[in-house]
Image (cartoon, rainbow, N blue to C red; front, side, top):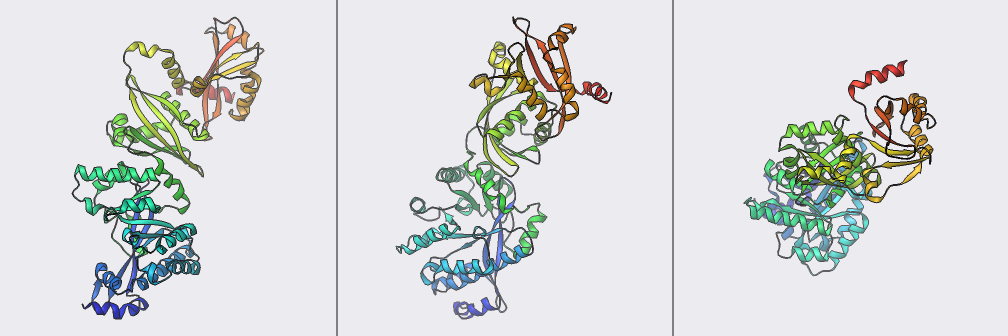
Length: 523
């Protein structure tokens, strides 16, 4: 085909839709959801068939006509966004490439704004990609236009990062939201190539950018990029460019669901997590009243489950039950971090040693919370170390949900929790503690029995009359997700104390005790 054919038939191709927008999926690695697409030009000519993009795009750039094609693509993408939104379907953000000539031969900002206003498309659904050779032009207008785009609410992406000689210079001078690195220039898949990718991702996080790898073709590439913290991927591994509806259908067939736009900021916050920490890393998400392992790097998989996928699934299942004391302790600690937003160190027993877990709340939004947990193994050097006070207290919290002392004579309660052991113990009025616990935690049908059990006037007499030196009763209490759980409450007098001081512990009831408790409630 002669190049003149493209020049002479461009307007006709646009008018008759020989040129169409094809969409290639972009998937968020951490969730596996479709979070964006790239809009690409395809020319299906009635005389010559499909023209390759490098061929017709190169000709249009050489003859200063590329701005016509780009204006048409912008119009088509916005029109399709309006169609999707009108149909009540989830909207997916689309990125489009802008040429250097778009900034010279037309007012590209007004072209985009006119299309967005015409179809009433939110600006966060349109991302603009540029290649670094745009910025090599000495015309300051280009940088000023990019600033206008950003101020108006558009994301600016750098395409083909690393393929030019001055990428780092422009990262210093111009801010980008996403850097797209092409896997093609690292196709050798050597350790050296992987180290370069890791360095790029690490740099991106430090300067506040997000990273997208395009040209991903294999499961192995996807797993590697996910492991090192690359946030988004694009490539034939996910699907070839297709018309919009076909791309959506193809993704859904592969089990790739569409990310709702309201969750974009939530998952973008993962950018702050250091995937290259060197430690075992877990990302745990709380949603739908349960904890889910969103991500576990190789070190954490080996540390907790010896790389066995089935063990990982069983651990997650156990994590959402109340059967194992150590898991209950971990759940309570994560819930404190989730509610307070304060970092906390927890210890999880494993084969006679401890996994020290540094827990951090990444983001909380609309009933979901994302927690990052950095883990390191602390080996117990000798058996005597297990009997140090800190370890004894820690194991006490594995067994009990609450541990407290009651001074009946002074009307004082001291509740022990892991954070309080570090920050100092607080004395609270005993009657207020019991009343608040009864009204907020105990099931209303059990509150009368609760009040009778914790009647401070009769506690000394009842404990003294007990053959075991303690009294015990169970009440239905609210779990973290609002469900009712039977919890056993035990009161024991501290024998070495001079006054009326009692030790109170609360734990999830053993299964064999539940029948007796339930029968008592029925009676």
